[in-house]
Figure (cartoon, rainbow, N blue to C red):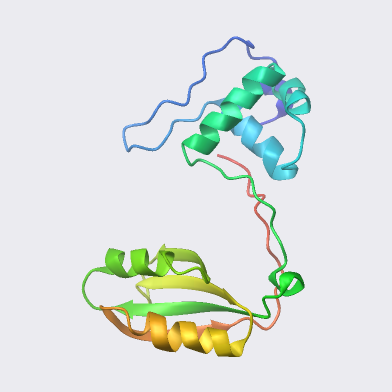
Length: 172
């Protein structure tokens, strides 16, 4: 959404972030525009965001807090794992017998696991792992993931080089 279109909306428009029928928050055009502003620059001042979307700084602050509380977004520092001491990354595909959600939940509880998704395809679950070295990666896969009840097998895809990592897909 273009900022001009959002700015033309009434500044006193109600915050349309009620839940939709499927339980996810319904986001209006202003909230989506705020998200886009923060995706471009997570440190952008609320006053600048307010100017772009047609709201006061206080209204933007409230909207951002609500989006954070609802789990719609997070504001974090994204690092290059190599530069902060994590020399080994891998995507691990997991074949599960039984309850896929139980395995996904157990993987989500592991500190080395950064990303978990249940899939329809060759694997039941994909988990991204970030470790300090190969020894830690081996320990996580061999002693912890493969030991989980329901894990039938794993296949590891060790990252050789991170070519692109972005979180700027915008909103729909």
